[in-house]
Length: 312
Image 1 (cartoon, helix red, strand yellow):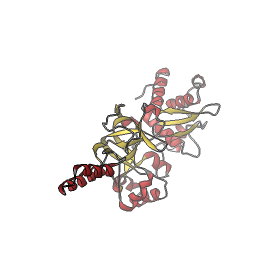
Image 2 (cartoon, one colour):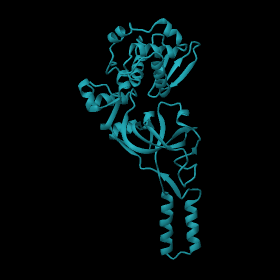
Image 3 (cartoon, rainbow, N blue to C red):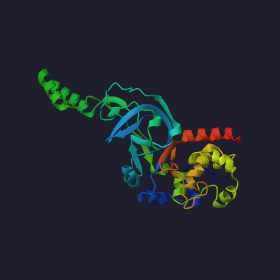
Image 4 (cartoon, one colour):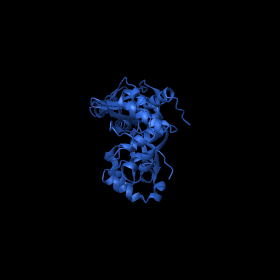
């Protein structure tokens, strides 16, 4: 089986994984389904006190998930429509503008606020987002107009017509932001490689035996000591063990490693969690630190240059 970042259901059949297997994992809340979406535009942001605040307009093509509260609907009906999603692959996000682009001011029923953030300030593996909305008349505004037309046909005085319309619209916006959302079908579920390893369906592409054999190849103690931080020491060891592996592959190997009961690479167990786009590690004093995937890749590149290791 070719190792990929994610797999569709038909690709899992050779492993004995059926649609019923995936359904079971969702029912038991062991798996949250992901879906691939083609290039679309989104409002990305975060939730503050339960309300969605945007900070940028972005294009995105990749894996998304919908709110977990919709899982039962998916299992029951085989389909969910949602305009609220999470973007699961940071590197696929293309920011177009951080300016609020709509004529309808915030706060409104779709966007509660607009913040001056950057993508790096969102410390999430999964970025909250909403489908890019259209501006349209609200349902109540259309109903109010309809009632007004009937009143005019009935030759009601214009002042009375306006009074009826004002009562119907009292405190309600005439124009709103709205999106039809995305249709998610259960047959189109994608399962990430990391989830497959976590659920015990597959093992890491590098077997434990292979890893132990490779682990005998290590940089000299002098080079290790030159790397002061525990995370730098770990990255240096990984580079000497796997000098020809790409940074994305090394990241994936560490993702798999933290799931093992006995770690093969992170033998000092400094890693707390390795997510899709960031990892958390412990300093020598036990303080947690966060490292973004981009910084991880940059560190590997710098160490390659420092130790004259060429990536093939």
